[in-house]
Image 1 (cartoon, rainbow, N blue to C red):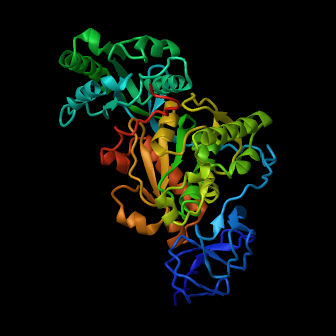
Image 2: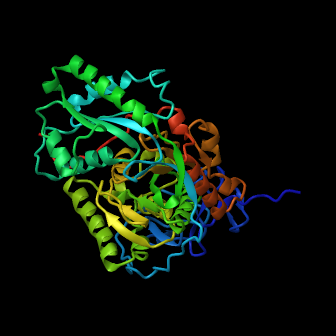
Image 3: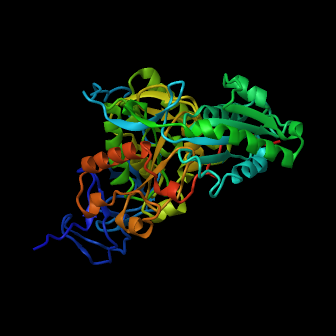
Length: 507
């Protein structure tokens, strides 16, 4: 005899809403809450479990996610039509939840690529990096010549990646946007997953190659070469010269072997996109459990998307290892509030139509689920966009919520593996870094198995524990870092997802 699964999910004893497991019709009996459903409620959406008066706080995860805009009855659907945001005080309590860091006696390992300078790579690419949009097509033409069977005699080379973008000129060389682009391009040039890089410029742009190299303390070598279209003699000559330079790098790039290295060399970027209500119930807390494991094994995990932890920042400041670290995070939050106001925007505009269709009403609810990716260990450092990540443990990077921009910053900072949770079904990929896709629910996973690597919907459908799913994710991270291809890699996705953060005027 099988036991009927509950129709709803209660996330905290103090909550006055629950999350539906299935599509519910009016009149459905919710025996676990002793209420009757009053509306048609899609799966993943919220149902009131008690009377909520107008102006009263609505709580999910044991946290305030908004306030009732009118009286809400038990069994009623709670969403955009009756839930609004209001300002309320949060207790940041910096450092209140800091705890001793536990380390594993025998750290896990993966099969990494050890570069001659000691850096550890998870992939073995050559990169062609444009300084400006004006050299993007030439960069792509060079990379295109190595498609198909062109690399057949170099089986240990993962590919030739063009890193192209829409910026690099029409700006001041002394403003914030230019500084961000310098850091981002420099971070990609230095990334260990690139065995070698060819930097291609037009010649007259604001983002001069010499400036880029000086800013990043880089010098030309046989595996860091530069050229400009104007000096080389135009499109055809530059493409041919670029092909010859990349071809000269291939034999040595191919001479690699993977060796066992400590998991402490992993820098894991954490992202969620196309989120739904299950993101904060299955995939994100399971990813958080994997993060806790990685930290115990000496590795680093990077949480970003500052607009998408807005409203949940008090949960992170409580874990800040020092007052300075906690204040850095709050300073970024304040910057975003000011920046959004200056653009006549508000941070609650962050949730997309897909997020809302998936049951997420506002930024507070979305952020509380998103922050779960960061696990439970101490927050040891906070970085600016594209800053080089040096600390070990759980850290934060100030990035926008837009997935390609956010991950561009984290990869520039040194991330060598990505875990990307999605409820609606994102198909993001990221060369030169492998991106692992975590599905939050069973239905989407089954529809999009060719894009999803792990089905975290098993937490709901098969009662897999968060800890068990976290262990599964952690072990898969080690496999991918050792060379196992992710679904996005098998689909060839990742060459168009380099999107630098552009702030300010384009002139």
